[in-house]
Image 1 (cartoon, one colour):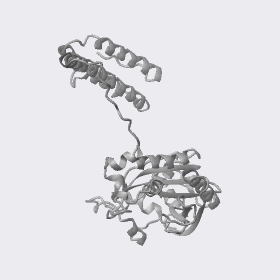
Image 2: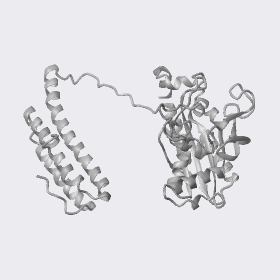
Image 3: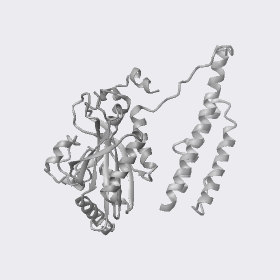
Image 4: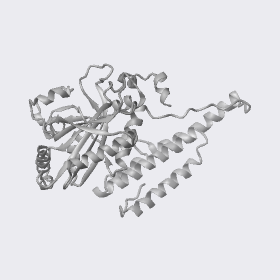
Length: 371
């Protein structure tokens, strides 16, 4: 019988679950036979009469809303402790029996375990994110299946805008009955997370967004229907294009070395105005010209710009729709910049990889080069 909890504060929960863990440990010392192990399993994990279910019925179902999360964390840890106790008792007789059958030759060399290493794409993505974390940016992530509103409309891609064609969007089937803004698709960039962050949080805001994106691209040496991006967003009062240039110049030097220089060219993105493409001096030839930079001395790496006021207005309207203060993203009072870069492109430049498909091939002969 599980007694009801009189209080749901942290100390009371700690005491209640500590008593249950002591009980698990005490029962776990007697698991010497298969029958004892099965009895332990039924006693604690049985679906009808198990003590874990009784804890759920007595505590979780009657907990106030604010106590459900801390209670749930302790409940899940208790379940893991029970399962670990049972697994340890179950494996011990099997290991002892197997050792007795085959014997152990202590003169044989041990089995070597090769340490794992990050995939080159993850390693590159973590390196980029780390640069901005050191600048005080926090990391945000979001869903890969997005709505049309967050992926397009809020980012100043109105319906039937020609810029949507460049996104090669993969749409989720059977969405025609939904309103246009609610139709689902595979996100084509990580920019929707910028909108979600602004809707949920007040400025000042400094976030970096790593993640996987999807486009209906035919696979070739430089294109893949699945790839990764790292985007960033900074919103505050008096943010200027100079802040953007200084931030990206520092980031490029941190990634590629202090000898690289950056330059900005006018460009177009619906969600920024003004917009720019960013190039860095070739890290292989130092800007003198080589095959890898097509003898230009420069490598185009990312896009950026100042957040378009239309984006702030869309965020304000969405905040109003969900019952939050819309005025804090008034474009007359705040400004911001955004940037985005492809992880695969940076990894290809850093490692001299000519075919993006190698990153997804699973070919160990290729991947082991990065071990």
